[in-house]
Image (cartoon, rainbow, N blue to C red):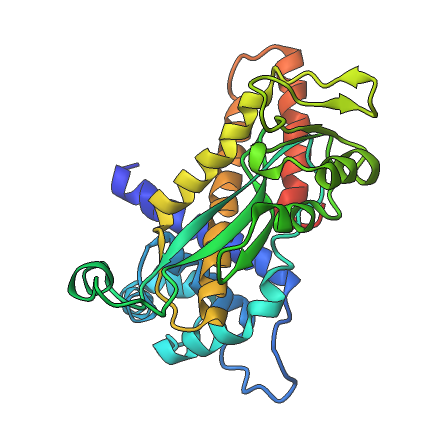
Length: 311
């Protein structure tokens, strides 16, 4: 298969996975909907738009040029770009259901910022450098990442700067984990007790003012921080998202910006799912030992749960 054909096939598979994930949101917002396009189709278009790093007008042009994509999406005709814009404004309260993975062994928590395209860098910093800027320049994202598979389990989005500690508990609430990695910015007695008592997990968070000390478990046993380097994998996830799908949010309102950012995270999870399934399929044709085969079969069972995003 030629490289171009293989790449095109990957896009079609990406659409299939996006449509499967969309089953966790309502098919229509109202029983009085005109039912020309269902929410599952519009959701898959939104996710594909992030993968191709294009705009609503750009994705509409691509769909009109590709009959195969229209067939995979089940479209009789291509929606206008305003249909996608209106859908992005309404899907916000439902889209968090898709990022609802509940179980992982090791997780890492951290935050980053995404730029906003409301004003250009030149306008903010050069032309009007002597004036105080009233518009916010970035949106804050806090995530909890599975350090073994690099999946995003939960997230918290804020439209202005806040202390990292505020979002530590919400990004871990309801998860089943064994170890939690975080940097010194999350060092507090409240956070440590939440991980120990509520999650029944081990907090590997360095103490402020120390170079290699991670505290004690209930004042008795010293926490071993030899695996603290696993925390850096959350930085890897941030880099993957920003390089693949862009670090700038094009939406005008907070609602559309939040939806755009969530679709980037979902697209990241879908791509990782495709890569793991590709590896597993290859194992059936490779001379691995029985122990390795058993290990990857367990991984396959976990990925089946990830595919439905209901762990």
